[in-house]
Image (cartoon, rainbow, N blue to C red; front, side, top):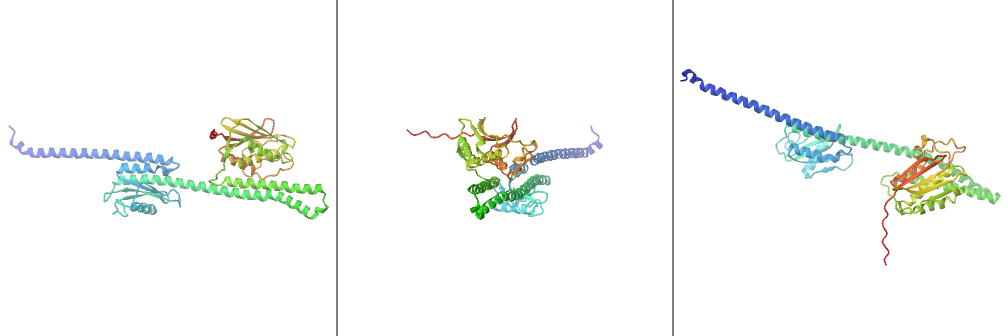
Length: 427
């Protein structure tokens, strides 16, 4: 039998055991909660890192706003919506279906750049939570978590949600800075081109205008003392210099038009034979036009192109070849099929172009090295720039290939398209 003193301690022993079990259970629960918190923190950290990688590589971060909303909804369980301001002055982009109150809250949050709603220090009585998409110096939008009521997010969830929003905000600001830098570069380039164009026009218009003025003045004041041959020569100078001015004006205006955004070509199905034939008829009117010989591969399909621009391109290339080649050397205009493209090649036997200039000659107002010419050929450096712009507008390309025995071959490649079938004639 148990001794009487030991029996007296049984309640204390039982109480101690229960307390020890309760303490062990409390410690186990603490450890379990700590493990769950660590797992939740690791999950949030992984989601934040993955979304950060997505934003870092995104060229258009605004297209990933749905991933942001899905991440917020998945971590909180609440409905979401967003408002984006990717560029200043542009219309806000609304994603989701916020009602009028939610939309006003999104705009206020984006304007103020601070969180609003439950768990924040601003408008904490509101039922919806609003988080700004913060960049470095301004908010570029906001998101909302709908229907929290008086229930605030846990601090770690709130910090995680704001961190996700900040990554989107920084990506939007990076895109805005890149767009502003690009626009500034385009503006500077446009201004530089405009200045160069004005300088070239003022220089290259002066010579033909002076010739026209001098010839016309001689005809007016001394016409009765001039022979018929002299009057014809002066009139010919006026016609030639006027044609040169017209060509320079057309090239300059077309180059400016093709450089404008949203330009539309007047394309139709055209025959290569007709385009080349029209170019030859015009060049034959020149004193040296007989030097141009054309070879066209038979059976070429119709071309989808702007005939007026194609005609201007060929005129410029042929004029360039005649101008920079010896007076007795032939100029070839070759048209043939090359795979899925039509190849137009204008070939001359001039001195060629130095390798350092072979790409730069297509830049506006660049004329290459003219040291090989005793007399500087007239021109402004607009024609080849326009030719490349016309080729690119037709989704084609224009390149320069040096010829084996001297001279250049300017080669236009246009993609061939399937022409629509003509309806069969009715019997």
